[in-house]
Length: 182
Image (cartoon, rainbow, N blue to C red):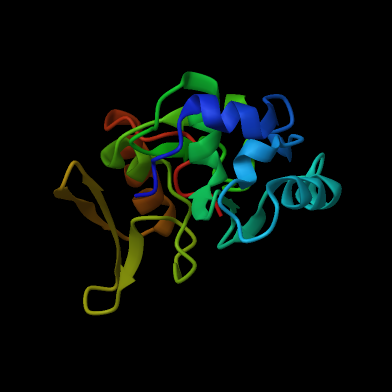
């Protein structure tokens, strides 16, 4: 994990707007270009002319990422560092949109909690997470997994009943209201 950047460095290199989630490059000092084969002042001027004031990052698999001082970072992680002064274990996008880096949409979490706020899988055929039709029984099955434990919630004649069982279990197990959204 590339976490050598400090909060002080990142605050000197960029500006973050918590309301919009947008990060912009700041004007850089020549100290950031020392050790280049070209003159540091020349490199500094060229970089500032091209990048200062521009939006940071590009989309990659839905997330905004950027190369900062030669290393790639997820901007949601860099933003956490910028705002809190520490690197996060894991950052969850509460609304499920991985490119929405507004501060109110980010929260530090662990893997188990993050798994309770996932989108519906693209290969889902029933239209509901944890619900599937079992041809051999002719019934809708409902299941859920939480903290590494699989729970079979029952077999139902109606798809709607299987979905209801799943939703009740999600609530009891503390899943986020957005879990399973498309």
